Length: 255
Image (tube, rainbow, N blue to C red):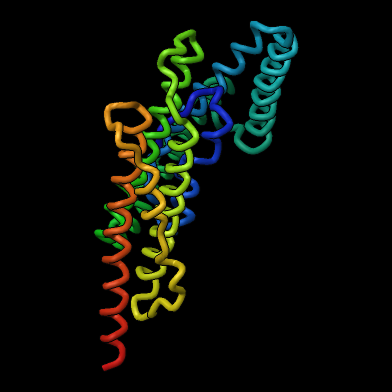
């Protein structure tokens, strides 16, 4: 998933289809990435350093030192009570435990990630692969607008997107179609013998989106509208394919 800027304009909020929403819509671990324990540790370290440099520096140093000392003392007490046969110093044992604990944790995360990838590989359909590509394209358009906004906010008013409201409206329509298609794909994938009775599930906003497309393809807003239209066309094609697929399955069950 693309990362948005820190100060996203209000009309872009809620437009991006996040990884969490995508996994909820598909009920599959799509876009899943291997969690590296070093990354959250780095983030914690950066946060501590940032706070040390700020007004909370003394408090952060005191708390960090206290936690380290208490951990060491607790381990030392446990060694004397239950493992007095261990001859290495407590501080060295603490380092060894942290090292092997990190290896075991990372190995567990890797195993869990591979297991989720296997589930995805076994269940992903051709239609879903196409729809996921369209989601990436859709999110990229939003990211491009966000970057353009940042350039404009930096003091370049000439790059502002003309008829921005039309572009945002087109993206909202495209988002609705993508979400609808992903929901439909999931229903068909999980219920291969189920005949769709909710016709509104196949209703799309392509006609409205086409009517909104401007003729000036060279303009920025025209380009963005055209991109949204192309994504919508792809989604419509997959929706027709899914609808045809559901009818085929329905005919098969009636034999």
